[in-house]
Length: 204
Image (cartoon, rainbow, N blue to C red; front, side, top):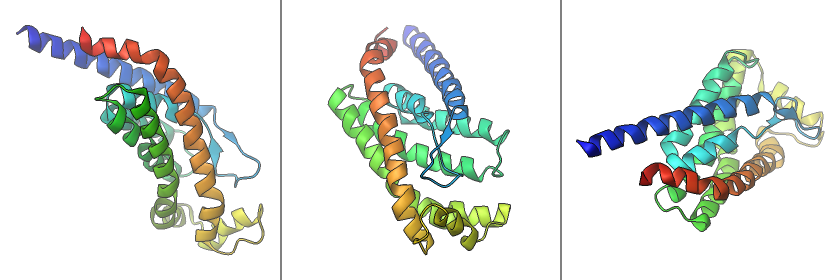
């Protein structure tokens, strides 16, 4: 009986912390900004940091849940018919899931760092198939953007690019990796400070 009550208490705490991380992620997403050397539809923000912290301290499911809540909320104010939110969800999950998978059960800073780096790499790699086969076709269907229109947005920055795959390799992969890496570095700094707090959640 005591064990059941203890488990329920821990679950409630986990839900509360996950909700707090989701709220913080939503706020940080609203503070995103454009990067001059990138197409106008690409923004930089730190909204993945709370999701990574949730994933590393409470498990990858919590991290994915933070990503989901952030993008559901984003759909209420979207300018892309939720296509941008779909893209963000796919890439954010690619970032936070490996971090949580490696760091959650074994609270090692080294494992957390490897998980964060793995997530940044996976996020960058996933930007190719997710955009090529899902996100950009969705833009075409929902928003009426042709492939030529999308490539044209990249050509405003670099006229020499001639195909969608070139655009992704030159722009999206490096940008996504840097974005994921920045989130990983900030998350690791905070994780080292917050880890004792979250670990206490499971020891009580």
